[in-house]
Length: 295
Image (tube, rainbow, N blue to C red):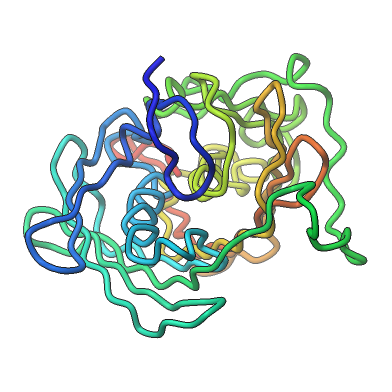
């Protein structure tokens, strides 16, 4: 396995497909970074939004190397990304502080902005480190899930769309939520890890917060493409190391009207600690012959 430096969202570790496919390099002007949008992270014909966010976050990390973690990050998706095409990411530090810095990033392909990002960059504590904060008094309870081996994998055939991303991520769904429409509620939960064994970290949480099927599938079935308009992720802790590499995820929607849904989500690490929370606004579009399900 390839070996290289960590991304700033973790420590030194063997390089993985995710590290390779989110790598960015300084460009020809200050604050600009160049990279490539890889088709391996597609949902259907379009790059997954969490993958594009992680790509932009790599540039943010290099912009604030002493504050490598996106404690709060919001992305607005302006246009679909172009898989297999180069990109550049322009960054701007809006405010630099001792504990937090506010940074903006724009990911551009083919002369058009694809997404706009605003982030509060800081530093997450390491789990179990000396002087780490005490356990929280208020904690979001994790879902009651069977073990990963008892949960079926996310299925392209069940969702009705090609999912190249499943060659990069191993996603197991709660048995009662694996088939669209079977859950009877707008909720999906399960397990997620990198298929190549890469350990989860803060950067990976940005991807995994947008990698499960849309929660509305559990209630409405295969409703069509569910593109994200805006996504916010709050990183709450650095994932604890675990042999299996699994994170637990749960996502739910309590509001759907006029073709727009608000979906909340959370990720927990192998120790049961909350590591990320998310909220996104998505468009729920009806399926037709030329517009298969996605998200």
